[in-house]
Image (cartoon, helix red, strand yellow):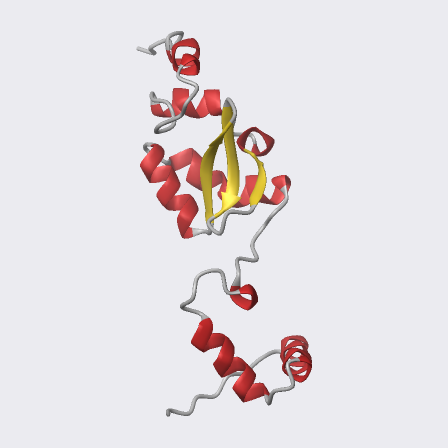
Length: 143
C-alpha cells in the first residue's frame, strides 16, 4: 500500500471527519472505502453534484448547446459533464447520466424544435416523427 497525503480546507476536513464518525470509521479508512467504491456506477458519496436547477443548468451547459455540431456531439459534451438528453413526449428532457430527471430542455432555453433546426435533423429515434416535418419542413436557407 502506498501512502499519500491529502490537504483539505477546514470546512471540508470537518465534513469528512463528521461523515467518517457517522460511519464509525477512522477518516483514512473512510476515504479509502469511498475511493475503492468510486469505480462502481452511481456510488452515492461520489454521485454527480453539479447544477440541478434550470438557471444553473442553462449557464453551465450553454457552451455545449451552442457549439455542438450534431446530436452525437451534443450528447458527448453533455455526458462529459454528467448529463444527457432523452425523449419525453413531444420533446426532450435533461437528466443526469444516472437517470435522475432534472428539467425539460425548453426550461433551459433549448426547445426541441430549435435543436432540430440547429442540427437539421430530429433527435435520434424520436417517436414523434411528425415534428420533423413541422419544424424542418419550414426551414429557410440563408444565402
